[in-house]
Length: 95
Image (cartoon, rainbow, N blue to C red):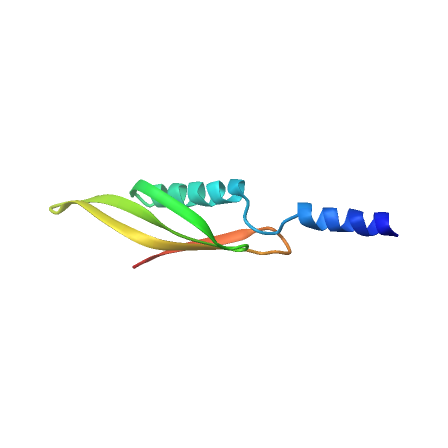
């Protein structure tokens, strides 16, 4: 019985449902790719853990606007991870 409980505990601890370092890098890459698809130049993306299943951060963007030149701005980003499925969603919004 003790062996069974130890195995269950180890399995639970090794299967963390929160964001891993790899997940954070994937979210940052996804934000970068999506922003570039929309015609922006991405100068920086930074996400960090706010809690096990939540990331918070920002993206810095640049876009050339005719007659105005390069416009620099930032957006606030958040990501959440479903602890049951392991899938995450993210969004970036104007400050």
